[in-house]
Length: 116
Image (cartoon, rainbow, N blue to C red; front, side, top):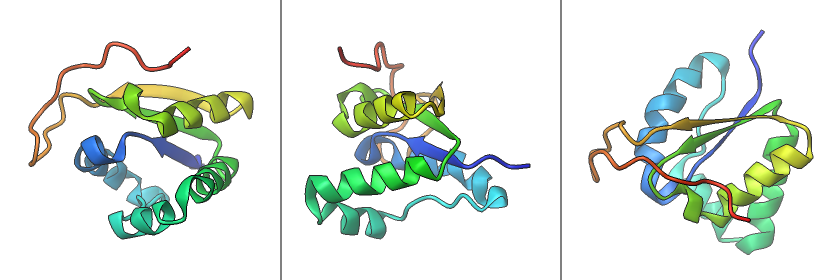
């Protein structure tokens, strides 16, 4: 039985690294959000982003945070982690700094993820 997973990550910095990981999920029918779809969601402003996150996490059993160099700077990743925790979802973090990105190469390992 496959699990419904929500992937949390900093889109601008890590989308290419994340695509490498998420392409594995094609078998599970867990296709990544396309850049065009993400731009459409963002165009609705913060309320639209929050609704999309809330609905996506509600359909998931687990949130996997894919941690790149600057992930901790994303307020949306912070929101997703807190939402998952408060909703009692499974929550796991995976460092992705060593995966190559054709634009940026590899990055350094992040030092901290959650803000206080």
